[in-house]
Image (tube, rainbow, N blue to C red):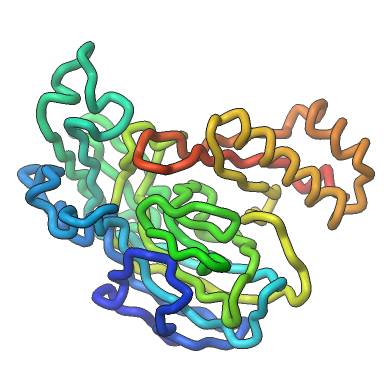
Length: 320
């Protein structure tokens, strides 16, 4: 199995001009080691998110949220769909979150001055589970609160058609920093292809995250991942999609949130009509009446240019 080592996973843009790190065949799996969003800066609670002390923060935008890639998939062409199966995520021994002045929606809070008056870093130890690894391990928020590690890939996608966009705040139909908790093991991510080889990149694994990632930082961690790549030739999709074992999710990112929700719902309707044989009327009525139709608000944080990320989801039992 081909692999990308962590020290190779230090790019900060989805750039179609970069030389691929790997070339693989459809159906092949790849192991990728990733850095956390700070490229290893946060190791203890004494490491504060003070921009002047963080390497790469003298650049605009800052060099944060590193990714690995591109990976060139043989035979991929513009107009195809790349299908990425998340086979495994093994997170590091700890994760972190950082808050402070001008970070997130309460970074200038007067109601709770401690949130905006000083920088705070929390380190969350990870303990292994019955397997002896963090695959089924526990994240310890503090001495009293803990929960199962639920890892996912926060930033992934193919290189956009014409633009070069950063891994910190780049988002679009091609993927990007979307922080979708459903990009996790056992799920298949569908992405439209814009360049020969697709030019896939990924990084920014989270050990866990609440809906919206309210502070702008989740439980950020290093990880070792395994992904499998397949192609659907000649099928063009309008935006990233997620195929879960029991449901499908259409994704869209925009501001304000209601635009993201409405467009994700229309994207789901398009999926139902073009691939599952629904009439437009039935698709329209289904999303309004089905009690199991869901809107997921994955990311909604005030960080630079990040859009709000919504997913419209319907169980597969309604698609037969």
